[in-house]
Length: 55
Image 1: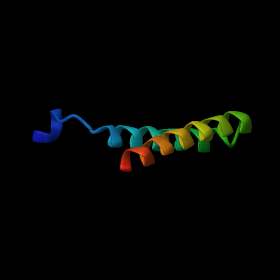
Image 2: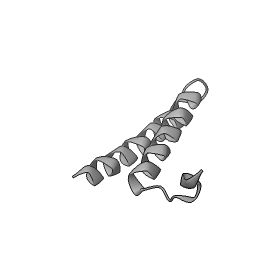
Image 3: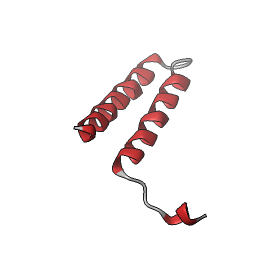
Image 4: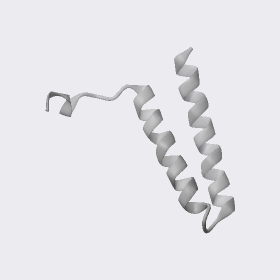
């Protein structure tokens, strides 16, 4: 309950964004392969940002 108003770190925000992009890419892969590839590319850029934060 006390963590209700706690702000998320930048790494946590990027991780959530990465997971959402991968889910969208998976859903799109059944209908529109090009859009799924674009979402996967976006997810890869977010992953690179996450890895840059680790360093």
